[in-house]
Amino acid sequence: MKIKIIHNPTKQWATDLAKELNAKLKKIGHQIVRKGADATICIGGDGTILFAHHKGRLEGSVLGIGSKTSYICQLRNDNWKEQIERILSEHKTFLALTLQTSINGKKYVAINDFVIHASNYRVLDMEVEGVLFEGDGVIVSTGVGSAAYAYSAGGERYKPEEEKIQIVPICAYKRRLIAKTFGGEKEIEIKVGKNCAFIGDGILLTYLKEGEKMRIKRGENITFFEGVGTNDK
Image 1: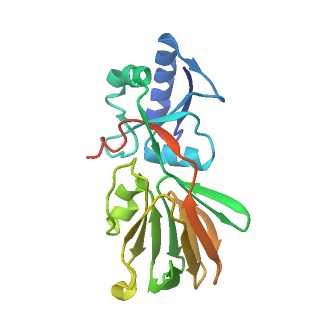
Image 2 (image 1 turned 90 degrees about the vertical axis):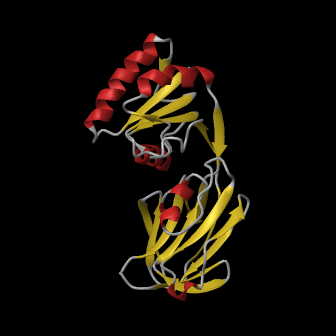
């Protein structure tokens, strides 16, 4: 199997593990490549996977190695040696829904969620699916992201493979907007009433201007090795 290895260079354990993994994979007959991979192994935690997706670096089936606090990562930095060979040989995978939108002609993608948030510590007025409300912002989440920011904000938690898109308001004034869940084909229409921040998977992508509109819809599915969400402590 052709495998790409991506690690977080700011974490020493991830750098050390990447070297060890490189040697182990070669020893058991896999080919380490930079492009054209059948699988990508991300080392460093959930953020490493999310950032690699943001940069368009993921190829093939995705496997993560993180710590005990990781959710997307299927393996931990203290148990990967016992399981990595089996997971790669069995190659059991599932498809996960992602999100995409276009702002001023530029495409943005997310695995977990898109967040529209007030950027000046003031209440933001918005229109989401025809509902006018005021609050700190709104989260549009996938099944994978439902266990992250969306859940903390009061949303439902779904299995990573469930094709659902969830809208979760952040501190909605008088609760004029409540959390709602839609099927994966739903396009979410949002209009912002003030300048605000637009965030994808925890990364500040751009700033939205007063009156700006957007449509958030499903993006290309991403293939994960099975085990996402099982490392949830």
